[in-house]
Image (cartoon, rainbow, N blue to C red; front, side, top):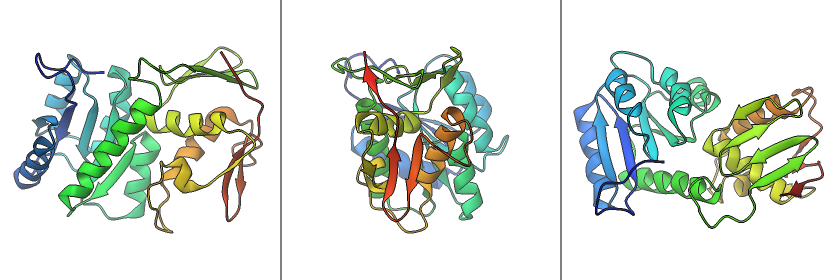
Length: 243
């Protein structure tokens, strides 16, 4: 996580990567009014330079940057540390939104947006990060074992039976933890996304589960561990033990 500024130990640090001054000003003004610390970058290169020095609690990325496509930054963020990613974009096509989620972002919001919705989504990502155990020193159950796999809820990693280690996004860890906490139970899409209201076209949870399946299933197109219960949600079928 980030190193908070001296005297402000409880304030979350957010990096905003946005080249549009008007949009950036709205985001900064709204987030700072809720006591978030915001540092803005106008291009991907300057953002990456800063990221090498300090990893924030959350990155808000515009997909249409002047020097690189925002989706190319999402994967790079995971190599520098564990932080949430919120995509802020004017691209309304479903493909672009799904691509951001496929690359590892936690959520997205379309321009133009309601400032309070932005704050709500930021808080949701930060809350999931803490619940997932990455930032919590009080988490008592850290390692979940199933079928030779080991999920480390604090480090956001998943170790395969052959000891290969996969780095998970915050969102993937949160979803997988929901499953291992309640195996053999049907979980709705809303439950897996933390009670967020979903539209029928929202594919956020489907994309996250698809990414997890590609890691743990022998055949992701014919899943045996995470089963789809049509009209109801998903079920995790493996036996789970905690250490």
